[in-house]
Image 1 (cartoon, rainbow, N blue to C red):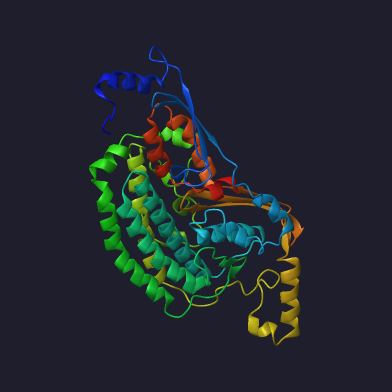
Image 2 (cartoon, one colour):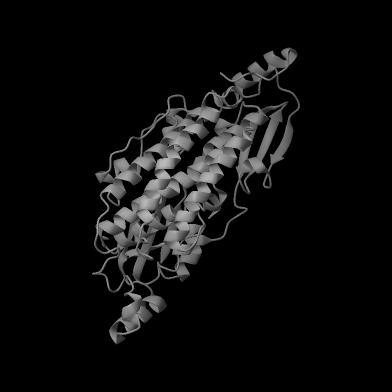
Length: 415
């Protein structure tokens, strides 16, 4: 259990305030305090409007929307492929995974199945993105609770991943790699071997990173028994991803509703037992190991063939060489660029297991190359809904640990 940092003469009051949420006979004049929107511990422009009884929270209201960009409305004025770069800016720590989730949603609207090679590349890039996002979350969580070295180790590994992303996509951060019906390009020669090499050297380093925290007394004092989310609350508040699994719910879309060939791979879904900050940390650490396991399997049986849907001429652009030498392909490319991939009328909802949780896209089409409506189900927004409940009764310093353990991104929350 975490160490109680209250002085002896106030320990009884703190215990009673925690028991009844800061109300009752110990109620004193309350103070209103705003944490954010510009604050390191809020991981972006989140604002927490807190009501305090001493150092105990009696109320916590998250205020979002400072980063709102209207992505969903912008989508109504763009072709389906033009919106791909906007998905990079959702969870900008895992743009490759965002691209894949959006592309699959549109492809299901078009009833289009991409080749096995394309699916394998999407799985590899999505799992690399999961590792990158969790490393960032782990490093930021470490800084939040005072462990600077973890951040440096984590970012060293992320730099190696960004080198691989740049080789594949031409960009380090906002990749825009996926296309409707395929990918921007095939993997470069030797790239899968370099990914394997990264995995081989990463696992020992990951064990070293986790060893800095897992049995660290200061880290355990700040996380064990803090920010407990029960199984029932996690489900009731719509939590997904590691935050849901940390509360003992073994839900993972890659297992429950497989996509992109995930049913072919063997991997475990780690779950917690207590639902506290410590459990959520442990789940993310194990998820990185399982991601490496999936990547290795995908590379071991990496298929040949096309990396885009060759039978979808009205959806995926022709090869560049043919555009420059054939009138038919030139016209096809011109129509795709100016009018967008032609979709049938209808609606579709698809959700993928992203690093932060369930990322869903609901698309309504009236036909043509532009969506009529597009709605994004962002996991960070849903995960933050638990804050008014989980923060009450905790110390102000505990709020920092809780926020770090939820691992959210405001670009995705506000959209």
